[in-house]
Amino acid sequence: MALCSICKNTTLAGEPYIKMQTCDACARRLGLIPMPPATRRQRPCGACNGQQFIRAILREHSTDRAGELNGQVSAPMYVTYRPDLHEGWVMRYAKYLAIESAGLGLLEAYICRGCGDVQFRCVDVENIPIGPQYMTELVDVGGDDPYR
Image 1 (tube, helix red, strand yellow):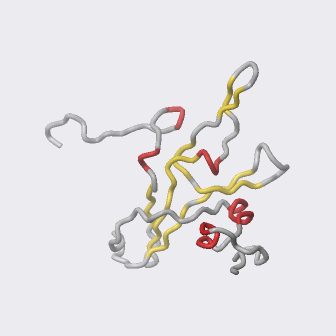
Image 2 (spheres, helix red, strand yellow):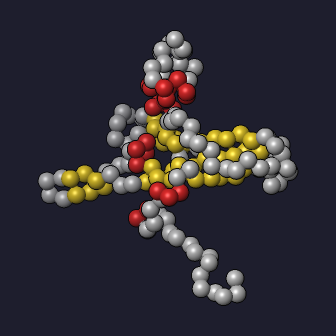
Image 3 (cartoon, one colour):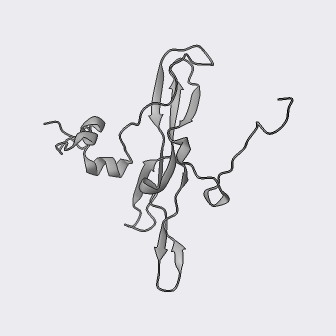
């Protein structure tokens, strides 16, 4: 049985944790998820023609607003978030975000090992909602201009 590569004392249980080489507790604390399929076509770096890249799922780190005092939250970085609503007796209101489950538009980066050029990609662009409540807007450069 394989042990967690971080804490070194927990046996890995389940396919996603074996792939990530971490236990559930370490994965949740550090904001780790299984790597989704790559989105970038395999081609040389546009800046230096380099052939090797580091692919990384970006993560964000913050303090936990609703839990333990000075608790840390780490989660994959997303373009926007789905609001989580609380149904109260008198009214409905948005709760603090549960970053891990509310994210839409997972971000990944490709870093050229030759020159350090960074290219960002979105893993699930089709799931990103459009609207000011998500701080997103659709920009269409095609338009009706016949001279494009």
